[in-house]
Length: 171
Image (tube, rainbow, N blue to C red; front, side):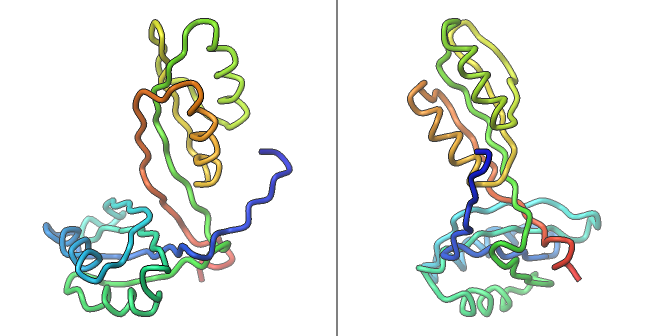
């Protein structure tokens, strides 16, 4: 990974949608995307520091619809308070992956070496498997997941992207 420069994929755009923290809001957002045929690449939802609101970080595939159309449709939802686009390459994005892989004693050192290079952690070790975690930019998580396929992935969970505008972009 060192020395490798990742150019952002401008096909995908990240939107941050601040919504009222009420039941059914996420279902209405998902229904909107489904009805309109908009493709969601990634979705993460969590309350904000103000209990009245939640923050939805949604990565949209612009091949399914123009960004302007997606924003206009989101803006029509009753509980949407604010919509911000995080411009590609101008945001800090992270994703969490937890994965269990086949790992007999003879392969563990090799796996831990890869994990150390990626900046991950060993969460648990079983007789013939290991549970690992990695937090990082989506590209690093993608690359690490690809590296694990030959070992044999038993179970994998990824959170979806969370993102904030770069500090010089936030104002």
